[in-house]
Amino acid sequence: MPVDVGLLEAPAGHALLVCGSEPQSSATLTAWVATGLRGGEKVLCAGMTPYEFASLLDRVGEPRHGVALADALSAGQLRLAPAEELFPTDDHESVVVAALGEGWAGVRVTGPAGQALARMSPVEYDSLEGTIDALCSRYPLSALCRCDSQFVRMNLALALAHHSAVAEDTAVLSVRRGRSGPGAEVELNLAGELDASNADLLRELVAQAAARSGPAPLTLDLEAVAFLSVGSVRALLAATDELRGGGGLVRVRGAGPHVLRVLQLLGVEQLPGFKVEEGEP
Amino acid sequence: MIGSAATSVRAVRPAGSAHDAFFYDDEAELVSVAAAFLSEGLDHGDRALVVCGGERNRLIVEALAAYGSRLSAIGQRDVYPRAARAIAFYRRFTERGLEVDAPRIRIFGEVPFPEDRRRWPEWGRFESVCNAAFADLPLWSVCAYAAGSTPPDVAQMARLTHPTLRTARDRSANDAYVDPVAYLSGGDDGLEALRATTAPAVLTMSSLQSGEDLQRARHRLRSALGSALFLGSGVGDDFVTAATEVLINALTHGRPPVTVRLWLDAQRALCAVTDRGAGFDDPLVGYWQAGFRAVPTLPPSGLWLARQLCDDITFQRTVEGFSVRLHTTLR
Image 1: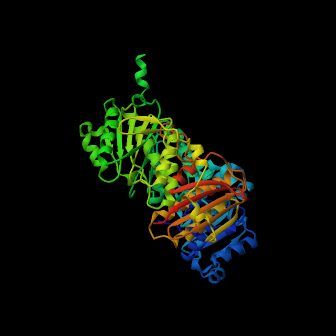
Image 2: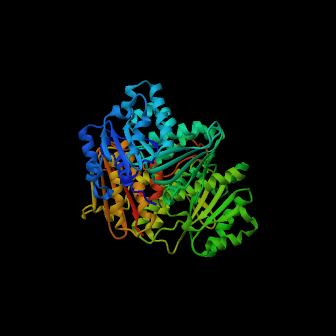
Image 3: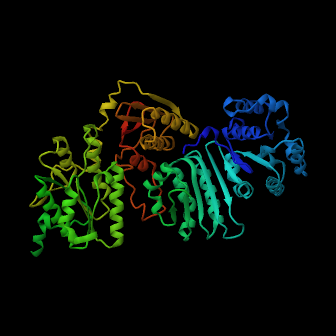
C-alpha cells in the first residue's frame, strides 16, 4: 500500500515535527494545516516570520489540498499568531476556549519547540508540554510542535514524554503507550519512508521505546511504512539489541509485501528475540 | 604407510567446503553418481540436499528413499532467483543442518543457466563466488552439467570455477580452476548489450548529495520504471530498493556528487550509480553475509540486500569515478 509521501501527515493530538532549516516548506506541516482547514478547525501558526507564513500559505493554497484559502484567511480561520499569544506563562486554556467559542470545530496550534524552550526553564517547558497534553485530551485540540533534528536528539526523553508522535517529511514515528506503569506494553507506529535520512532518529526513538517497554514485548507496527532501507533495519537491530539480549521480545507486525521481503531477505525474522508477524494485525 | 590409501582424492573427506563439477553423459549416470556421493555422507550422519532439474530430483530421492528426511529435495526455481539469494539459502540450509546434528552438508545440484545468454556470466560468477562464500562451512557440493547439451561457454565457466572435477569413477584436482577474486576481476561483466549505450539513458540524475536527494532519486527511478513494468510486479520495487541501497553507499562511503543513470530496453533494466571516489577492489562484496544468524549484532549490509533484489551488480572504474552497475530482467 503506497503512501503518498508528499502528503504524509502528522497525526492529530500532540505531536512533534522534525524539520530542516525551512519549516514553512515542510510537506507534513502543509498537509496538517490543510486537514485542519478542511475540517473546519481554527489553525494558529506561531513562531514564523511573515515571509515564512506567506510561503506556507503558498503551499497550503495548492489546488491538491482542496482548501479555500482566501475564505479561511478572511474568516480568521488561519492566522499567524505571535509566540506570546500561544506560550503565555499561564492560562493556555483560554486560547483554546476562545477559539472554540468562535464556533470552530476544533483548534490546531503549531509552534517552535526550540523557541519555547529558549524562553523558559526546562521545568517550565516540561510543565507547558504537560498542559498542552492535557488540553489535547480535554478539547478538540491538536498541537504540532516544530523542532530541528538537533533539538529532538538533545531533548528526546522530554519529547517522548509528551508527544504522541515524532514526524518529519518522509516518516512519522508515533508512540502509543499501553497501560501506564512498569511492564506496560509499548507500541511504536511507523509510517512513511525509513531510510538513511531518518535512521538516526529512528534508532533513538526505538531505543527510548525499548528502554520503556521493560519486560513486556515492544511492538513495531510497520503497516504504513512504504520503504525500509537496510540502514533502518540496522537501526532497529541496534536499538533493540539490549532488549533482545536480555530475553525481551520485539514484535513486528503489519509489514506490507515489500517491507516483509526486506526483513526476510535480511534474515531478521530468524533472529532471536524478533517475531515478524505476517498478514493482518 | 597405511595413510597413503587416503591420498586417492576420492577418499579424502575435505575439512572445509568442497565444490566439484561433474559432467554426466546420461541421466542414469547422474543418478548413480549422485546416489553414491550422497549416501556416502548420509551413512556418516551428514544431511543432504538435491537441487536438480527435470525429473532428476525425484529419481535421486527415490534411489535414496531409505534415508528419509535426512535427504531433502528442492526445485531449482525456489533456490535460484538470484545468485545472492541462492548463496543465502545454501548458507542457511547448512547452518540449520549443523545446528541440528549433521557434521557436514552435501549438496548435489544443477545450476539452471537461463536461456538468455547475456545472463550466463552472472551465473558463472555465482559458481565462482561459491568457493569463497562457503569456505567457512563444512559444505560439499557437486554441480552436475550435461556433457552433451551444456553450451561450450557454460562448460568453460564450469571448468574455471570448480577446484575439483569428478567423473563416474574418480575425483581429481582441476588445473584450470581460477580463484574467485581473479575470476570476477576479469572478463565480461554481462552488461555489454546494454552498456554499448549508444541509446541515451532514459533517466539521468546528477549532483546528488544528501538524504533529500535520495528520496527524490528513488521516486524518480520508481516512476521511470513504472512505465516499463506490469502493475503489481515486484521487480520494479526490488530494483528501486537495490539501486537506493547502492546510492546510499555512494553518498555515505563514496565521494559525492553522485550521478544515477537508468537505461531500459524491452527485456532489461540497467542502473549505473557513479561517485567521484576511488571505490574499492573486492568484487565479492555483498554476495553473502557470514554468520548473520550466529552473531545477531552483525549488521546486514545494503549491498547484500541489493544483490538479493536484482540480477547482477558489477563495479567499474570510469573516467567519472567509481561506478556500480545493477541490472535486472523485466518480466
